[in-house]
Image (tube, rainbow over all chains, first blue to last red; front, side, top):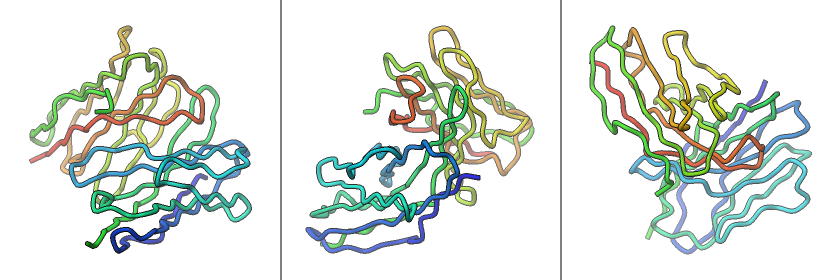
Length: 116
Length: 114
């Protein structure tokens, strides 16, 4: 069965520093996608970055990058130059491909606090 | 603004009642997904529709049902409501069913059961 594990319930980072949010996953499907979403206190879910299981290079989107280590089944999110507005809940998610559609499972999330 | 519209934003009702949550996907998106977010269960995938057809099912209770209409909007029906159904219900949409497509989430409907 699919599983996503985020072992850090909460993280603190100083403004302007980089931070890594951990995510490990478990799947037997050779084809899958990994996503990170941000949920601010206002509640909306914001897509940040995607990594495909066959992608050779790590994904990057602005200040966000994904440290994908397929053999270790990890997909850590790196946020560079943290800003106060980065304080939020961050979710790692995985999508396997089933026939005609797919389920997406989410980890429990990591709450990030950025300190001024 | 994700382009996904969910109504209502808040809903307060009593146990045993039935409610309908509505979702309009982003323009051009054919897939709609429903999720339930609660403190104890986290974010749970409920069901996915693509162009009117059910495509994937998650942890959706039998008391819950959904459908996607020809104009692509979707409704999630929750019946015989229990206190434990209190949660934030998200709708998300994507263009199709490719595994690399991000899902764009609406702002959610917060359901409170009294």
